[in-house]
Image (cartoon, rainbow, N blue to C red; front, top):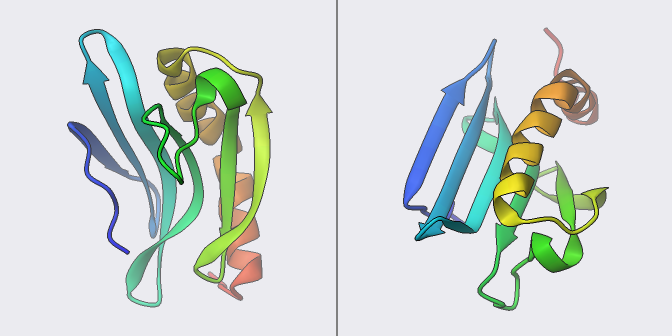
Length: 122
């Protein structure tokens, strides 16, 4: 499934075969939807490692950080492996900032775990 598109999107290449992807939609001054994702280039494709997301639309697969809190989806073997909760409910803009900070503070741990799970050696 291709990634969803957002009004504003940024991809930042990091050391080696990793990158972060951030996307968000705004309505006036309010963040209505976002994704912060760490990706690893493996098997010829960018694979999700971890993903933080928010969608206030109330759709079937949406997660509203203002009600549920900020969480992180952890991926293994191309699918969602588990969900870890990061914080209690908070405004979407603060959750977006918190997701970016949390990812940068835990980046090496997530990359290391992904490489171990997938048998990737330097």
